[in-house]
Image 1 (cartoon, rainbow, N blue to C red):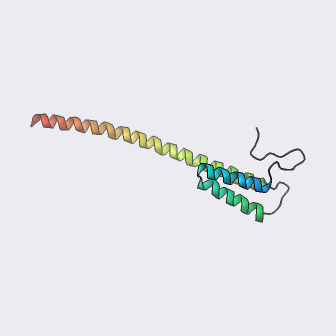
Image 2 (cartoon, rainbow, N blue to C red; image 1 turned 60 degrees about the horizontal axis):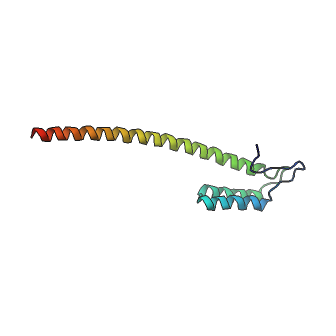
Image 3 (cartoon, rainbow, N blue to C red; image 1 turned 90 degrees about the horizontal axis):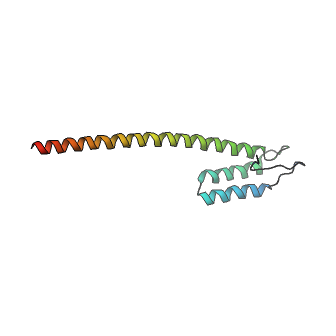
Length: 110
């Protein structure tokens, strides 16, 4: 499986540091995502001020993985909330129908 940042056999990265930051910024702009914009800022700061290692993108990969985990957790929470809301709306609708029937019955008695 190809990863976002691929490393060739010689160890050089296929993206330059500025290309990575620009790519994430473009994604943030395209999807109107504050989270991606924040990620781009964190990547830029890390690349500018971070300690250099054998793999300069190790921290960037970690930041991206952390963001993916966070988004997956948020997605799961939103799915649970939606399921709860859907169930409550259905229950509320059924109760509304029952009460409307009761009103009709009461009106008929009057």
